Length: 102
Image (cartoon, rainbow, N blue to C red):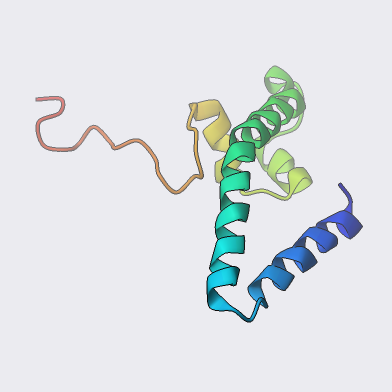
């Protein structure tokens, strides 16, 4: 998807935000959020696969080069190799919590 297509998607989302009737606006937003939940897993898997391909077992691009090339955060690239899944805002708890490792 090029910049033109991304702009169209952004314009469509802007149009939803401009729906005057609050109830209709919330309904539209809810439908869009539900649709996106369905796509997130597949999209994340595709991104992870490409990151791994670009890294090529250490013979390809560096993590930072991958992040720059794909326009994503370095931590997102690092998370692929750490095995984290999700939005990047929720990470596993560290082992320094009370009761762990004692």
